Amino acid sequence: MKKRNIQIYVAMKHAGNVTKRVKEYPFMLGKTPRTLRELIEASVNSCIDVYKARAISAKSPVPITDEQYECMREIGKFAFGVHYNENVIDENEAIKTAIDAVADGLVRVFKGNVEITDLDAEIDISEDDVFTFVRLTMLSGRMW
Image: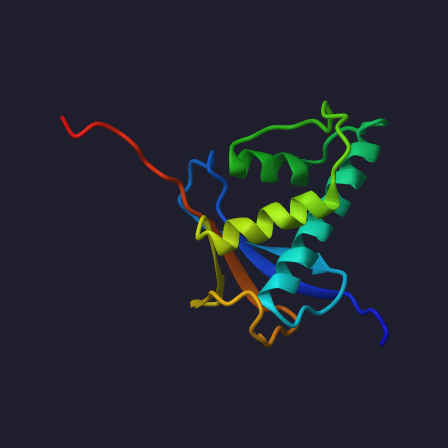
């Protein structure tokens, strides 16, 4: 079977973003996943590929464009392509961590407005579907 790239959208709100908006960002996957587990694996692999490309391009930085400036202003964080982390990524460990986070309930996944909970159940993923990954944060404090 031929490997085919598929573009989905991931709804994100950056924690440091002053605005309360959630935006949809295009997200390219290496193949069409059939299950939530495969979606997580493909998403992690895609993020690692982007991370590695950013690390390589940081070795020869270029001036930012007006469009990049506006995007950085919108999210409230300015970065100029400097890549300080020289650590090598263990892809298998990253995938395991992401799957464990979903299995443990620390991350919730939605397709549109419908939550996907079963890691191995078949899901229908089409081009331009919108997914939302919600990372839950535990709060702690005193009652007195």
